[in-house]
Length: 520
Image (cartoon, rainbow, N blue to C red; front, side, top):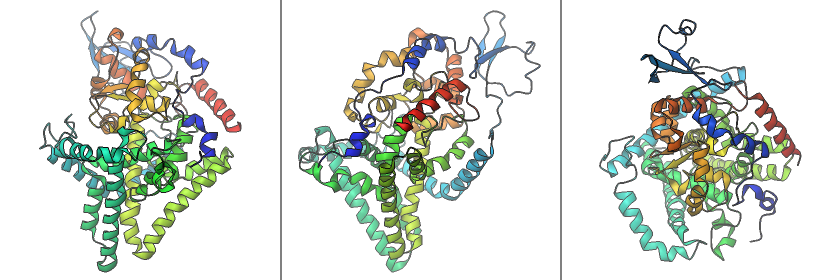
């Protein structure tokens, strides 16, 4: 199959070389080590921590109405306790600044109320399934032993070992032989179950218990089937030359199997990863022109995430992506995105006509909303931390998880993914090690022994203490636990753009750079 000319035109977002940094960014980064070390010692314009001493402090009376942080450190000078107040500690939970934010929150709340309970039931049951598989070893949640039961440590490794030699001849890299089992499972078995359910609904009417069982098996224990489908659709979307060996790589169906076939059963619109994610998100990297940006609102607030849901839904259905590409006059891309959207909705319409609207809603719309909610949480976590003084510092604004309990194809190295979008997943540890000193020198957003959804949960419920305990910092930084807590708060609350942007100059500079990109 000849190379895709559109991908050649946009090769920068499919590269396997690191993304260059601006000279201004490099100059700013020279001082980041000192900023980390002094995060608590001084207040600054982007939400600095200021120390309050005892109840007789001169500043205590003026701030008595504020909700202070519970972070307490001993004051060696006078023996009194000191309280570290970080800007935002006194902010109301419903802190929406304009009509647009309020409308987004209301729409997100309605979406969550309508589709949240059934999706939550399926996801929660999948978590129980995984816990049962490991005999509840370590407890139910926050066990640190996720995916250590029979299915993940015995059955799947056995299946991969038995099929590896045969499967390896279909893929470019032997490490990807497992994909053939995924294609059989997600592209043959799951569709067969779908068709059986469709036949049952056609003959007997819709059965909600049957639909529940289907969705539970579809997403798998701890929704790992879901995780692998979306990760492989993600990898496929970034793949410039395809993932399969000759001659199989020339077969359009196989080369696009995850986005154009398997994704139909998981709510994936074909153009989302190939264009919306790979082109838009990686070009603007969580900035104002990124259609799934979350850098305009504090990420340590569940209600802010609720208001973020409509934004992710518009991206997931290719509406905001199409508008953004149209604004950039990328008409060829607009056509491809629209084609992918029509493809999906025709698929839904066929089943609504053949079996009934209730069936299409239950079996096709449900996975779409399921994906929107879960991936909105994932993206919220991947880009939860931010330094307004260095908006393009990937070491901070993308997370890295070490020894992650749920690390699907090294997706936990999200900084590496943004530096090397086209890199093979087996190369992520090499790239991580290559820049490890910079991760530490720049106080990167590095955590250990956790997973994306746990970081999401700790962020939105404001468990700064839990985040600080899992935060990895270089020993020479000499940061206390309280200083880590303050740093977590500041980074979760930092905003790049919008009504809360702390560094207007950086936001304006980025807007100018983005405008220049639009005209290139």
